[in-house]
Structure formats: C-alpha cells, structure tokens
Image (tube, rainbow, N blue to C red):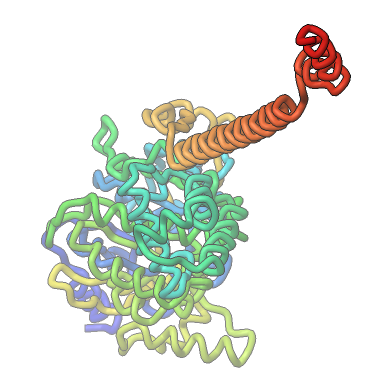
Length: 516
C-alpha cells in the first residue's frame, strides 16, 4: 500500500463518526490535498470548546464563518463577536468563484452558495438589537472582580448591594450605582455605619474612579434596562436553521475593559440560566470570541480565575466557547488546556521570539509521523490549517493539515441598505430597543435626600420661629417690668398736692382759727 493510501486510511479511521458531524475539509499530505479524506468534527464534542489561531490574513475569519454556517445548517444557534466588522456577510449567499469550485473539487464535494438567518446585536452606539444588563444582575462578586477591587473594597461592594436589597433600591445602571456610592459617603454615612459598620471614604472614592473608567469606555450604554434575555440567543428560524447572532464590536477595540465586562456578564448569565444537559448529541449554543486577547490582556488574576471556572463548568450546560486569536499564547494555559478543537492557521517567524512562539504552538498539537509541525506551521497557505478535534469518545484525533472548505455565504460585509434590512426584519429589535428608565436607586435616593433636606429646612425654620418667639416674649417681659417700676415710683398729682408742705400749713392755719 502506498504512503498516500496509508495516509487516507489513517485520516478516515481517525475521523470516523457514528453521529452527526461538520465537514471542515480534506486532509493534505505534503502539498497535496487527499480527496475525500474528510476532516470531520462530531456535533457531540462541540461543547468541549475550541481555538482558532493564526497570523493576520491566513483565513481565521473565514474558518469561523464556515463553522458558524454549518452549525446554523444543523439547527445550532451561534453567537459571534464581530470585532473587525467582517461577519455580517453571513446574511447573503456567496457569489461564487472558479477558485472556490477548484478547491471543493480537490476536497471531494461540490460548492453550494447559501445565506443564513442573522441577528445584528450591539452593546454600543452602532445600529442593531441592543444588549443591556443591570448592575444587580452582575452581583457584588462578579462586579468586584471586573473592577479589580481589594478585599476591603469588596466588603464595601457587598454592603452596597445588601443596603439596596434591604431598602428596596433597584441598582439598574451606572448612575444608580454612583448615586449609592455618593450617598453612603455623604448624606447616608451615619445611617450606613449604624446598620452595617464603618466604611472608608478613600475606598468608596477608589471604587467610584474604577466605575467612571468603565463609564468612559461606554458602560453607560451597556448597563441598564431592558435586560437582554439569553434565551433569545438560542432561537431557530422557520426553516430549522439556528439563528446566527452577530455582535458588532468594531467601535470598542480600544475598550478592553468594556469588552471583558460584557463577556463575563454574558457567560455568567448563560451559566445561571441554562439547565444542566450533560453529554448530549449536540450543543445548545456555540459562542465565538474573536480577538480573544482583548478579554485576557487586561484581566486580573481574579477575573482569569473566574473565566477559567466558567470555561470548565459551562460545557455541562451544552455551551461551547471558541476563542479566535493570532497566537495560542494569547490564551492562558489553564484555559488552553480545556479546548478540545484546535484549528491552527499559519504563523509568521520574523524574529527569534516568533520562532520560539511557533515551537510552543506546535507543542499544543498531537505528534504526527506525517508532519514536522513547527516547520509546516510557517508553510501553511491561505485557507489551510492544522486541525485536531476530539472524537466521540473524547480522544484527540490525528493531526491533519487540512484544505478548508470555502464559506457558503458572502465573504464580505453587507452594504448599508442590506444591513438595515436585516435589522428591520429582526423579531426582537423592538423588544430591546425601547428606552426604559424606571424609578430606581438614583431617583429614590434623590427623593430621600430631598425629603430629608426639606425636613431639615422645616425644622430649622421652626427653630428660628421659636427663637424669635422667645426673644419677643423676653423683650415684652422686660418692657412690662420697666413700666411697672416707673409707675410704682412716680407720685399721683393729687396725692402730691395733698401731701405738700404748703397745703399742710394752710390746713393747719384754718383749723387753728376755727378752734379759737
């Protein structure tokens, strides 16, 4: 048997499946594509997470597009983080090209152009169905980890949430949270200390600065109502295709704090909402995180631990996470170890550091008698990749240099009019894009402060009136005493005449005459 025949059997036996699968393409031996040596991904293991890596321009986005299309075709909903803005073309069919036909002829099946059901989402000012979440939904623990708070500050965060729960103060958006922080630092400081203990003003100031940092990156648009219900990510259209939700993130590439905040809240909400599924034959939802380094590059140790825990646990809910990045080293080792599907496009070796990175990347894949992995990694063409998946028993498949199939949908963005049409046809756009600003902590505390100020002002006026009354009474009493004193010391005019010496001599003179 020739080497080519042996390799053909090696691939076909290594990628054999009993259940349903996705066909990624055909394996290559050297530079030759071995027709019908299909590289298949079992649907059963898609919730074991994955990695798509490779240098810029090697075809990562098209590979992501191929996976999303085939998942939708199988009735599996998909969420895509579209950081570069080039995934909206999923909503229109591929125009086709002779090179695409030639590629598929080498792979072993014909090319078919299709479009897929797409939902455009946004967490910023871009047009689309808006995703929001309330502060309360984050909870004190997750919010503390995102803000990278110290132990003492985490305690204050717990007090804030407890105080708001006890006093029925809904924490919906950032202005609510900032108002509570200001209240417990100023007007409500005595009340808080009486109920929950002393808090540090410097700690509340530090928390406020970190909240303002997120607000500056656009958090004021993300936090609030109406909260997005993650069940809307798992919709199926009338033709049985999974909805592909494309989250447009082209305007937050320089805002990693907001991006990681959104990702952690979404994953936490999905984990809390979805029921345990165990090992089923197909996943409930697949999430692709493009430019994954944005999640990890500024993540604290506590946040990385949180992400690692979610990655480990969320697969039991039937959720698969797929990280798309330039180099596998962008993903922390503990998380990389959890990824079952690995698709590695070409890497560039321009420096000694690059060569070391390639050797490390090669060690992430199974050894193969057919490839010198570290050498071939620099020789892969556009649309070619090393692939290793988990078979239905959870065992890694043979490493295969793969000629990947072409996307069935458009490999370009939608025009403005096409994009607007997709948004207008959304069944959930009006559900989430209405402005809601119901009474919450901000308004309630403002009312409380205003009532307190009015009561204080009223009390002050009453005290001033009482002081004026006392002053008036005191002055009147003093005046009365002075008048009485004057009257007691002054003689009546008649008395004065009757008691005068002249009058007395005249009386005695008359009496003397009468007696004589």
